[in-house]
Amino acid sequence: MRVLNFSIAVFAFLFISAESTRATAYGLIVPTTEQPLHVESGESFSVRMSIPIALTPPPGVQKASVWRDWRVVLQRRVPAVYKTKDHALRYHMRFLKIRPSENNLDYVVTAQTQRWLPSGRYDLNVQGPGFSYSAAASVLVGDVQPEDDNISVSTASASSWRFHITPGVGSPRWIELIVGKSIPGVAVSLNGASVPIADIFWASFKMRSRMRGDKAEYTGTADGRRLIRVALPSDYRAGVVTVSQRKKATQNQSTSVRIIPAQTEIQPMEWVEIRGEMSFKPLKAIWLFADGENAVGLKTTYRWMVTTEAVAELTVFDGWGTPHRARMKKPLQMPLARNSSGCGCRMVNEPHVSILRFVFNTCFETILLLLE
Image (cartoon, rainbow, N blue to C red; front, top):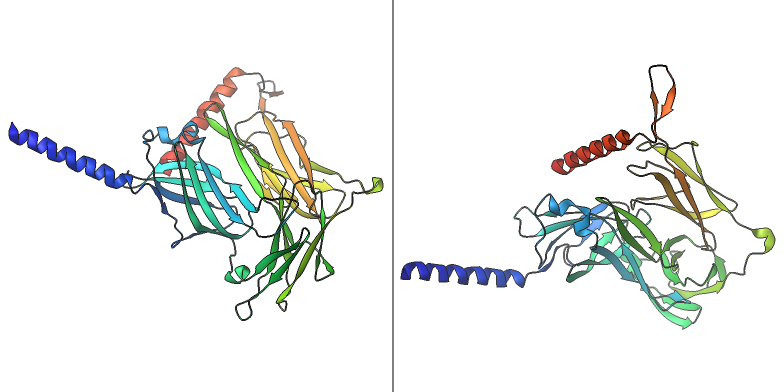
């Protein structure tokens, strides 16, 4: 009996010691500052982490309701700001899944970046119920070149900034600037000469989810701030960048944006080409869909899966950095079915059609999860 009690005591001690050791190791495992992760805009990436909570075992952990409140955020700082005090670029990624690691002690979180995400070296932050872990400069997005960091920026006035480039190291491709949401558009000059905006992005983007049955639908929202890039000539070593607010458009300079689908009727699970049409020359166009997918360009293709409406949002930036928006919302049409008389009938109000589609989609998704 004494031997049994001693064995139990030793086992309990070892178990508590192991748990205490593991408790000190909670946090991000991959990536780290020393071993950063490289990902292209629009690609998905995986984060391995140890967390202080126990998730339900598969397939419970695969349900969207388990991880709908989790967040994967990329952020970095921009030194120059105009009409805003927020220097941070902050992007919420689309959350895809959580899976136990091979040793079943840690978890692998997979998220997807936006296709328009600006390149750069980002800090990673993962948030969940009761924890928040970060790793500085651990995610490299797109074409990251060391010389782009070879620039010092200091404030000269409320609307101008001095920049200095260290000689002999390499010339950066651009200087970055965040414009406040209250500013509709800006004009930029470099050393007194007017220059065009080379590229533009949202400076912040949040993904909000809501449950529809067992599905998570996402809505993307921007806070209105924009990141603009001004190209720098390779022979520049110092200079001044100045920004001025664009004057409001006159009545005869009205702008409009609309979304045009390639076909009048849209059916579920059918690829459809949609394009944007506007009355001005665009600098950039960004698409957003209800499931969190996004696209870049004036034309894209998309298919709506298990839903009743085809919804798409388009934001087009002009050469001044002003955003113009359009939204499309169309009811999805059910495919035609042929009866014995050869009549084409739409199966809209047939209850068994929805049941069969639900069973098919559920089986299809289960197979995909098992194959992962």
